[in-house]
Length: 102
Image 1: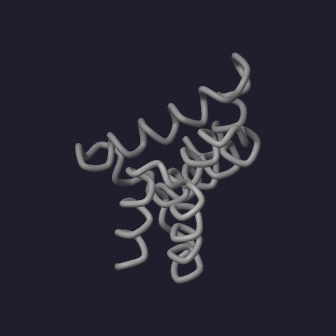
Image 2: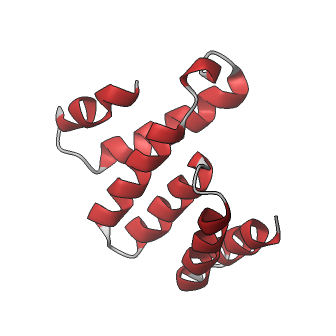
């Protein structure tokens, strides 16, 4: 997936506008990739767009497969996405906002 590789490369170079454009390309092809929504959230957060970032993190959390959580390859992805979302919410709100996807 060339668009994803280009998005990650731009993100790593701190070219967030290009990264976001490339992530959006990926999401137009497949809107159900949690990791891409998480990466969009990270880029938006760095740009100071906390509300939009939170929406991306919550979308990412909703797309996670709850049946894969016990497996190590899934646990890290789950933890990162929930951590990112929780950081942007006031105390207690994180559990309420993400409770429906846990």
